[in-house]
Image 1 (tube, rainbow, N blue to C red):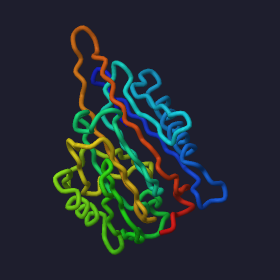
Image 2 (image 1 turned 45 degrees about the vertical axis):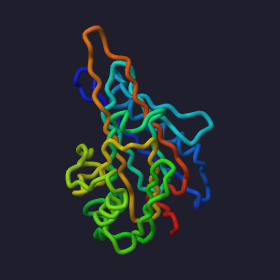
Image 3 (image 1 turned 60 degrees about the horizontal axis):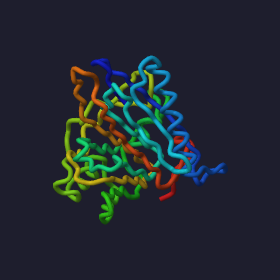
Image 4 (image 1 turned 90 degrees about the vertical axis):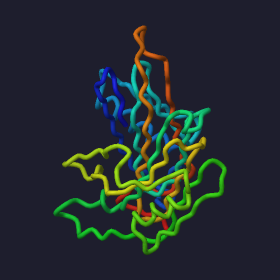
Length: 257
């Protein structure tokens, strides 16, 4: 997550581990949303305690949380990385993504990339386990792609064709990935992603049901101008709704296909 204040970029990261429905201690969708929101709040407070330009708020009794910019700040980028096969829905309240000027990118990745540790883990084999990738826009029929025997680029290309003019495959990222040399949780761009610019829709739902796959869902927000008489009171909200809290502890359990 990234925001700016007078040209200074502030970044915040949150990392959450979640018990899934097939573990001894089950967790609900509402509890999952609470854990993720708490993690993001902690990241904001740690990274930029003096200029917290992003706000994360958990919706009471709902399996959703909202990310928004504080007055006086731009909310530039939000990246949700899921390696646990959750079913997630995103929307900008009361607006279509195109009206809000929000661009979206879907980058399918291999879960093993973040699970392995260089020089300690066994050799990484980039392949799917078999399952589905499902994308649903508004109330349209879901687009379901079978994953068996395909790599991430092939899957993104299939989604591109199925979505038609709404999307295009790109070998350049919508914005650079977060990269940390000492962390296995952030990896360089893998060379391809599905981009949806000016999406004429109010919501997008992404459901990965393949234990070998994860997804990076990226949002790029428009910059807000700063008039002479003060910062424009312009707030953008992104709502993240967990449809199913399906699986947890990335290194412990996997959702069964």
